[in-house]
Length: 287
Image (cartoon, rainbow, N blue to C red):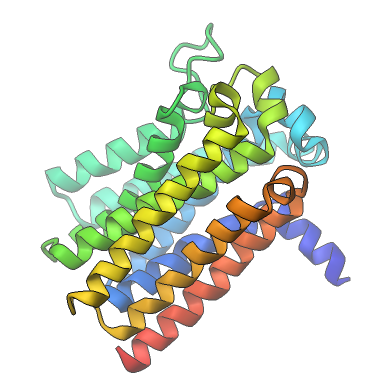
């Protein structure tokens, strides 16, 4: 029974979707910004639509990388399409009508464009002309999308001005998302290469991609250590050292585990959810 539940969660990418509200709540507690309740719904719905749409559009690479997940998605193709178009429309309308302001409208439009064209070609006749196929842009667009959606969007709707603490959190999250993307690209290097997706591991090789990932985590560590050293961060922020240390250990010492164990990526996302919930709880109680 438990195995079946886990399988359903992974096939439908529910663990990735759940990470959106969990990480949002964690940041809100650490930054002491009260995000609006409806923003959790908007962002979770947006992430769910992007995740589900991604299941349908990555046909060529997923046929090799995760054929079972692709087969499940194709069997639900009609339902997924209806959910994505309806859910995406609802998320956009909720965002625009609950806070009608031009800066937010621009951010919503940017987020919608990145979310859609990340998986969908700009020109239908050129299926490889999408953000996901573009060298470096793939990782940057993903990092920007998650960071703007989970941090900048709810911060602006909370009518809070970005300060140094927010900027540190934004850079940390941007680098963290890009690191996860590179690790997943290492895992999917064979299928991505055959599908013409120009990821870092495909273009530069796995070892060079690992160097980039470690560098990003050094940036994350430097942000937190610098903040703690100069008393810009409370001691509770030292919790954010743990994910970076764990990822660096995996990248440096266990590259084969990243490359060949697909379940590791799912465990990491589930672990991220637990960390975010625990971190948010501790920040709520003690920060």
